[in-house]
Length: 207
Image: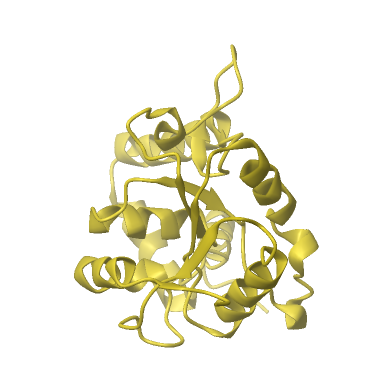
């Protein structure tokens, strides 16, 4: 079958189509938009992507995104901030969920990014998440409350239930976000007011 567009355009459309939330039509629109911009603008975009891949890693403590530091282990700005409350730890699935919580301005503790949620249909169990690292932190840090801030869907609920059972003998309070978040939704799409109220009304788990 004859290609509709020259090779470089087809390649760009294909790569853009691999991005989450970008379908074939959106990929085409973005590709043709990039064809119209100046070479300087296109180079700036390419440089930003390359620079991000070269300089960004994961925080050695909470696994949020962090800038790589050649002199020491990389830590994100939140972990380096001594003003954050070290006694409260918010567990989220992905770094983008952390951003959603931060936007509420209702939380001043620290975070732990699991790197996903339990999904047995996709072969994701606790072993594929950063649960072991969480347990190490609970032993090393003065954490008194653990807020399970996983998404209010089947996978997030399964992950929350697993953590509750795992921590049943650990001397900390384990809470979950209150109702107000629509079931089946993702935290990153929740508005600040709804998520803030859910944080304020969090409830104990397993009690």
